[in-house]
Image (cartoon, rainbow, N blue to C red):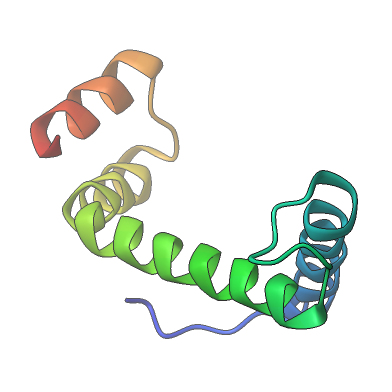
Length: 88
């Protein structure tokens, strides 16, 4: 929801692909018996969808925390728990 991009995105995606490949090849988390790059891509797509849904669900809390941080530069654990509790 911030519509920002970061220069380290390529590095993060490379790491995500390595983790997904490991999950499929070493832990049998693919859709079939034999590991494939399609299975790895599917895991990454599912993870991206999960993160997008999480961000949509927690947008109010993120914006509230943003406001608190801009105001105070830091928040305590109790303040964080209060803000998150309001949105759960």
